[in-house]
Image 1 (tube, one colour):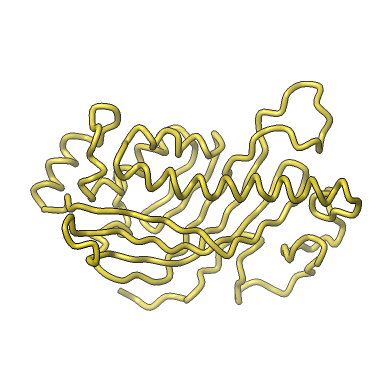
Image 2 (tube, rainbow, N blue to C red; image 1 turned 120 degrees about the vertical axis):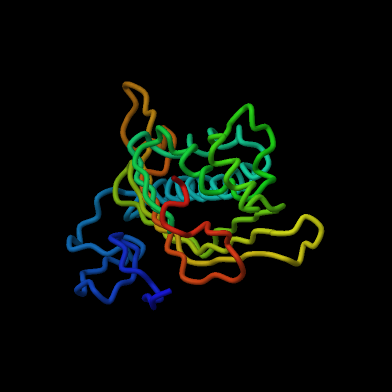
Length: 243
């Protein structure tokens, strides 16, 4: 494997990058990189008590979304039906990049992600409800890539920045542990890195005043930079693993 930077230069406002010129940083915008010091909303620069309470509320809503992403992704390991609930956390026009490839749009997102993850056999429960292709399944059985697993995704060190009433960005640290033996819980594959997120609030009803905290936050952009691994990933992070 060729050497790579410890942190990839991701085109995201919360990514630290040596390749980018020094930009103005507005402290009131929670450290988000910006060439414009003027805040775009009261969420980006909460001044009144009401603004600060709403900031805390919206911040928690996005934190809840990140927690749900990790937990439902773990649930997909034992029930394929959960993959659709996981995909519903994204916007219809989302852009998602993992080490094994990129996908645009909610349509087909669940199938694409599960194609990569189903190398672990416990994900094959309830196959009639949600299945990979028979060809892929048989090839993985033949290659003995269907191994027992338990998976836990953790997302921590969360930084959230609001750029408007209905858009926000975040960065969080990933630590994922995948058990690779059905009997020995000490045999695992691990990986860590950083998630770079963008969010958009959707489903705002007609006639609602902008900025009243209505609507549902969804993930519009996700880039995962895996910068360390330990153990055998069974090819999970190889390009084309979701094909």
